[in-house]
Length: 166
Image 1 (cartoon, rainbow, N blue to C red):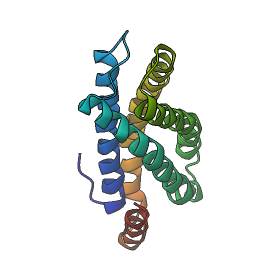
Image 2: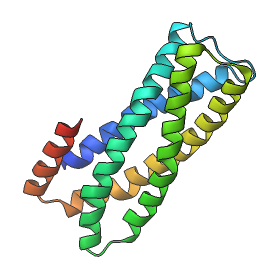
Image 3: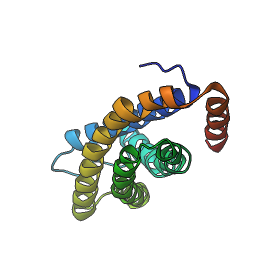
Image 4: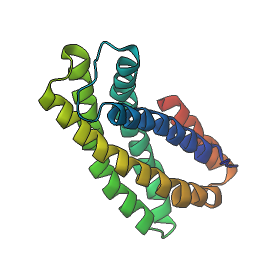
């Protein structure tokens, strides 16, 4: 998908990067359903390392930008429902992302135990399911709305601010 407004395009690119990490986590879980994976395996380590950075930091920065810069503009234009709905999803996703990051860091340092693998698998599974649905909503509702909402100057201002924050 391609957008004419740079802000929408940057958010779309972030979504695509998040999907890559989420899919890698999904594959990790699928490959090691019952038995905890070996955290010395380079693929496992790489996936866990991506989870610690991308999930925690990227989604918190991404969510903050949307809430502080975009949802407020939509609300000023009279569209309150999109922002309210996506904010509620952010409130559910952020703690899940933080917990996945914490569990991934712990596994990188100490490996997985049966208990820690179960916790990681369950929390990550919930994050994956919710994140895919959330991204789909933003791709189909929020980003197209930005195409209509933002004029060229505002788009330049917002995209520059978003790029600087990353």
